[in-house]
Length: 101
Image (tube, rainbow, N blue to C red; front, side):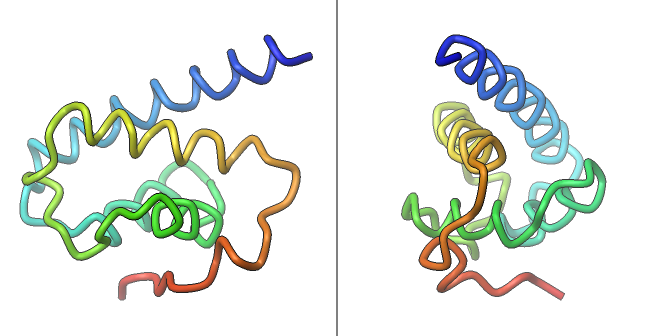
């Protein structure tokens, strides 16, 4: 059970890192918040759950995607991957995140 969840998180994180790296090169001036919203809409993920996890992990959602290092992208992807595998997003995870327009 735990191994299956770990593999699922790693697979999702890998997919997210690949998508974010591509976005980083194509749209380096895009904010993390906008990238998270676009990721959610492109891949059909829950934007509030992703955004809440990003804020909870302490990422500044106004930072430009092009300013993130590879290690930060990987950490961001792992945080979002874990958030997507949780059964339900706690209310506290959503606080503080305002989707970009």
